[in-house]
Length: 458
Image 1 (cartoon, rainbow, N blue to C red):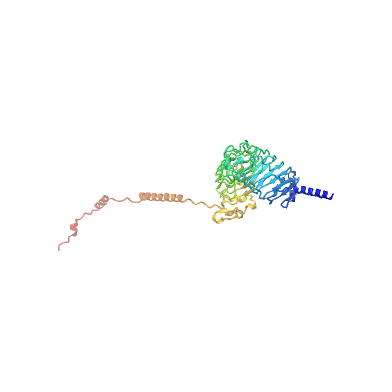
Image 2 (spheres, rainbow, N blue to C red):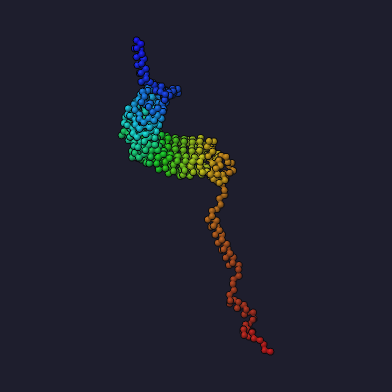
């Protein structure tokens, strides 16, 4: 009997050892999420820094919600009990060295978020995501994908957000439709797309033709030299860090729902009139680090807001780090409505034309680098530390060519006047005939020269 009990205890311990919970691992930390939101209610399992974790026979808690397997130096993802769950909603495999994922690795029927960023993936095998029917968020940033055809996720019907940043996908997308219906493209349900830093040079006219519900687009850090036709459904747009040299009113005319626009570090020289007039929903505008930007039109937001800004919904505007020297005082009405205005890091000319800026409600955190560049005596002075009396405009002296012209004309007039005076008031010169006639009339006779020089005889 004792032998039987010992054998039974051994078997129970063996079975328990084969399927022990991952929370018993020395590399894992488990804690319960007590937030009121039922969607995120469950066990959070953090198992970083264990490269052999997937090879061990651990099981997840029955209420597991998040599993963090980042920074484990994993090179391959294959099936494991850790990757089998009916409750897991978020899986983090980022910051590893993964080069391959087995098609049957993921058996997570309720997974909604998958992070595979910062790995060495070049291909996603067909069928890899077949059991992830509820996946909504997929991050593949900072891998080594070079062709869009190597990523098959068209069947992910619930996928709403995808991040493809810093993969060399640009060349393969120049002639392909991003939302291709033939198998490898994105679905029409995509609401957020990030393709920053993919070496994209051209966005052809059909690039977003089937993006019927795209609300968020990040296409920064590429080689785009001109704007393109944006999906009219956008609410968030970031085209920063591209060599775009010009923007116009026509670029944003159909983006009636756009709330956030980021135009940082472009090659633009000016913000033309009416450029943002049609953006009636815009609340946040960034125009930072535009090193060539020297002109901001007073009518950039239209003419009406210069007198009545009641319908002006913009809340934050940043122009820091550009090359602006002045702003038109007509902007004081719309700028006075802003909650946050950042004008730091420009080449401000602190004269009478800029004095009106001191009347704006600038946040104290944005004072320090809001400084004068000219005139020389005010260089590097903080604008909000200066008294208004220092904001003066010198009387402009006439230019050199005007002075020279006036001098020449004056000299010519003096010469002409002198000539007229001489002609009118000086006596006329007498001729030889007039002198001879004058002397003959006086009764004198001319003596011979010889007679006048001879002496009388003694």
